[in-house]
Image 1 (spheres, rainbow, N blue to C red):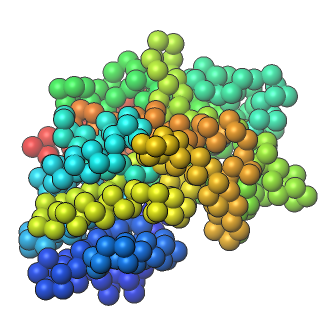
Image 2 (image 1 turned 180 degrees about the vertical axis):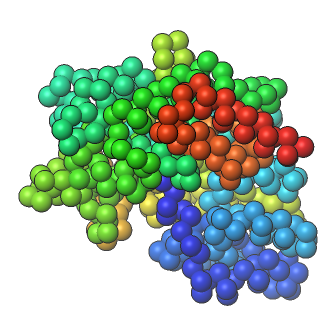
Length: 460
């Protein structure tokens, strides 16, 4: 789901800037050193334009370093050990933000000052909560992508089915529409695919199934989590394409018109609309009408689990601007405030609107400015078109509201380091894959819980 955010770093950019960036504190250049995890060619180009605009406005020179997300942990710890931390880091996901906080590398006082000047009321409360450790703000939340359940509105309407926004409705729809060459649902189940864990967590948070409790105890084998394993087991073994599925195969299945639902990220939406040439819809009706699937697809964001599970919730990734401890605090704060301003923020979101849903909805003068602007930003790769011109208002509204209902395992319980370790070890994807081979949901839950407890013990 995060294929664009984790693409291989640009070789030329990385080779030319990494060493200089890591040495930015002591190279005598006086430049503000900014690392950005937005490292694809077109995104680097946009960031360079914004950096140039900042320098023109302030006179502060900036050295931009494009960093691969997969190499970030090693790079930041090496930089910290050498006393050469960057001044600003952009597009940092939650796990990495909490990793830095756990190693006391963040200037939370400076971050609080930036948020105060921007006005916390202009941010979605949930984004602030996910980036706060007690009363300390760890980062300035910028944007994120949402996990969504995309479904065939035409098939649902023909069968008289309501939108699949709860466990019961998802299971009923999968059972009803699983017929002929159309699967009820396509979702990642491969043991080595991070999307499998993301899909599971998205269903889990809707049922208030948590990885750990407030005391840090592992709860994956709780009744609520066993219920999620049971749902996923039924969907994967009875109403999905046979065999282990990965993120690419499930997209291909839905695009071919061979599944009634698919669990993906909001990055799917530009492709669903035919705006990316290497991932075009291929359903029979799509040949004559390239927008057939886009027009006949609905989107569910936050969902509820079994009865009594609480408020609807949604999985999503939130990226932020962070201020490492250092001696260029004032300039670093100035840069982040610029990037979150009317002059720069819409252009930053415009890199990929389908995967950069604003966490800051507006300004003190206009609380919905950035949300409205986001609707109009051109999305796509080979063809550009605003999503708001393609998808109906209810779909756009569901996407905009995503950051308000994001729930993530571990972060509320201050277990960000554990989350990073479990992402690497993938205990949940392994347990989901085991159910394809006949393991019961209860056994899968117990297996995943034991694996997480082992990881927790190894972390000390």
